[in-house]
Length: 227
Image (cartoon, rainbow, N blue to C red; front, top):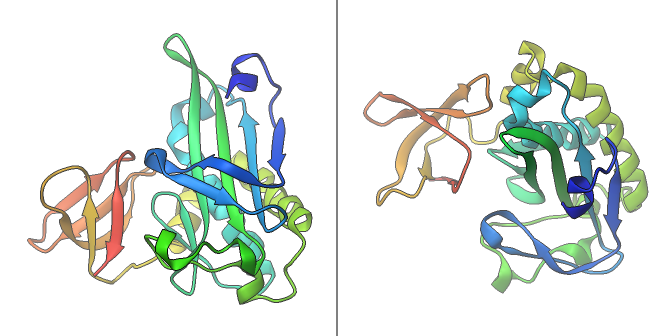
C-alpha cells in the first residue's frame, strides 16, 4: 500500500515466500508457512473507465484463479465476495484495498493468498471454514510460481472485460451455493436467509429472501454461509 501511494507502476508485484503477520478481511490473521502457499499483492492503476468499477477487482482476482484451475481440470467456485472454493473448501482468499488521492481512486492493491501445497492448510483449530490446497485436489500442481504465472495470465486476459456483460456472466456462473439456502450476515442482528439470484453490475450480490423479497448485498463486513 505504501509503495502504491508512492507511485508504484501499474502491475507492480510483491510476492512473499512466507508470512507471519499476513492480513485477511476484517483484520483476520493470515498465516503463510514458508514455501507452502502463494501470497502476492498486485498494484493496479485503474484506467478512467475502471475507476467506476473498483468493486469488481475482487471478482477479477477470483475469476482468474477459477479460470486457471479450469484449464487444469479442477472445478472451482467463488464464494462471494472474495474466496475461492474447491469441493466446497476454501483454497484462496482475496483482499482488495484502495489508495485514494483526495476523492479520486489512485490505485488498487489486489492481494491473494492461495494454498498451493498441503502444508499450507492451517490446523483445524484456526479455521472458520473448511480448507484445502491445490496439491490436495490436483497432485500435479505444486509449483507456486507456475501458479502465479498462470493466474496473472488469466487476470490480464479478463481485465479488459471488467464490468462487461461477459465478465459478470462468467463471475455469476462461478458463484458457489447457487440454488441452495444460504445465510448472509451484514452486521445486522439477524442474518438474511434466502438464495443467490445473481450479481449487480457493480458486483453486489442479489439474494431472494425466504419471504420472496430481493435484497442487494453490498461489499463490506459480510459473512456468507450455506445452511
